[in-house]
Length: 335
Image 1 (cartoon, rainbow, N blue to C red):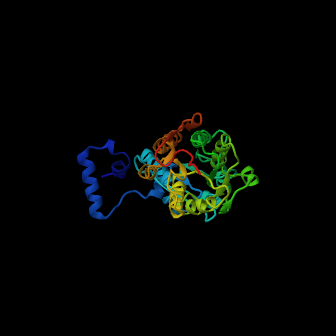
Image 2 (spheres, rainbow, N blue to C red):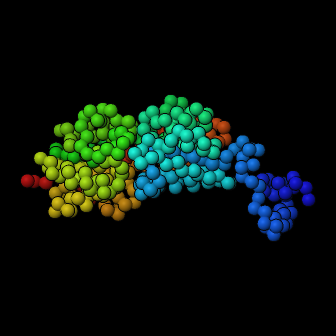
């Protein structure tokens, strides 16, 4: 049996009869042969067979973020054809994305940048290698395939909702404005110097509607414990907020826990609104801004497949948002 015939059994099975291919695979299994070496195959085809995803956070933080997990799961399902794999490239402990040296060494055909800060060195490293790039959420990179959410409109809608309910004293629990792991009150100067476009856009959406400048607490990550500690600080301010706008559902769920610790009832004493509409938000009956996370993952996967096929990415994709009103929001309490 020729070498070409054996090669076809693994690489071009449609060229052989089912009977002949079965015979070859049976013989290979008996001899302990697992198939062509993937490194040699990639050298021959000039394809790595992998899609790299650059993250701003460590894997432990990424896996605890429901919005990110849902998007990645749908992305993986969309590109999961043949022997293609997904390679996750985590950021460091203080964010900032993967190191440029890691980007220089990664074996991938397309790179997805998921929510990195402006001027991220990892983006520059991808461009220096000439690899096709898809950006999800942020930053804005000219002429690059992009999938983003209308963050400003989503935040504006959430703020308008609480204002329409009569709230005037409103607190904001924000995502990070810049890398470095900062947590604490965020003033106007820090907001103006924001490196993260999503945070800046959501904050701009809130400020476009709120009648009074809100007290803002910046969380270093989208975790419930950060939402809880942020709400504890905000609820000690004078005048105490009657509503909290949270830039993620996880932060909002932490804020609900803090409200209970303070003996407050949601929404009779405190209105809380999230952002994302994850499954946990529905379970907690949380009013939130819905971004279609499944659609975000699918559209990202579609762009990856287009680039793998050698096509142009087309115009940026913007996914719309809607307000989902549930029981965590209500009229301003009488005092």
